[in-house]
Length: 217
Image 1 (tube, rainbow, N blue to C red):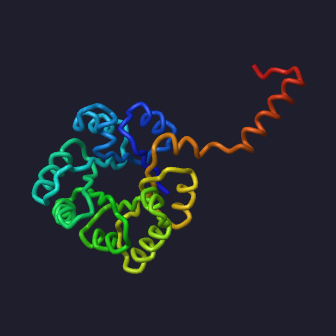
Image 2: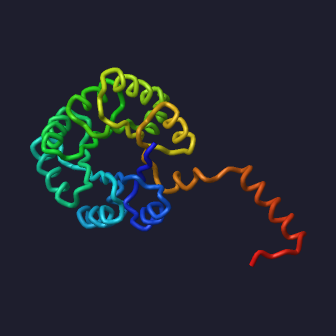
Image 3: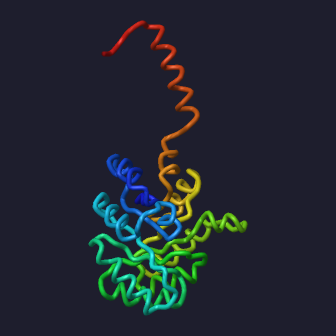
């Protein structure tokens, strides 16, 4: 499974990228707001760090304006993925932009039917929002499994990008049900390395090593 990092924090992106933990980056208007930086400036810097897809989201609501914004964003770098909402206008924009050879991430997906029509519109990525489904007592992993089966049934190339990932369990579950990609904040990705038994084992090793009185360096 590919790992995308959901942030515009260039220092965090650089750290994870140096470890080989970043296959791409996702941003949205809320993330850009948090960064406090100009969208074109920070996105260009991110694209200079990461070679994989970098999602930059349009903010217009109508198809023609989305297309214009998408073309502007795509000029930033070759690895830009234009992010559009899963609305009828967003699908129109997806069809045009993907037809021009641009990568398109269709976001805010909450049903298998939405994922199906996004694939038919030429989406490169479909982004079902797991955490937000959990918020209303629905199982986001069931949605991913349904999308996986539909895409496999008909040979769609659209990649399933599990979004709104909030816990390490979300990552495990998304991988098990066949998501192609997951995107998560840096804190969640770093948490994948943590386990209480690892900490307990290290604590015992340190105590035993101290008793030997030895040094390696």
